[in-house]
Amino acid sequence: MALMGKNKGKTVTVQLSDETAAMIDRKLKQWSLKSRTEVIEQVLGWYVQPSDTKVARCRITELL
Image (tube, rainbow, N blue to C red; front, side):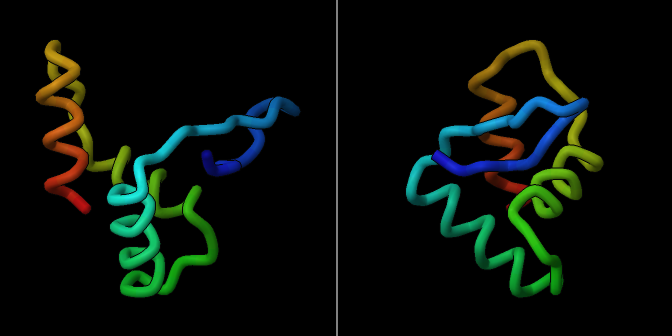
């Protein structure tokens, strides 16, 4: 699991697979960001939510 940040005083924790965490860490360095939270925010900023969650997971992975 990874601590991703706080939202309105609440801590948000996201469980990541080892593969996803590694991809996020690579983008963290490539994009010169400060935290995994910033990487996730960048990816979600480009993301359009499809109705199928399996497709959603594939598309997020493609962005990373």
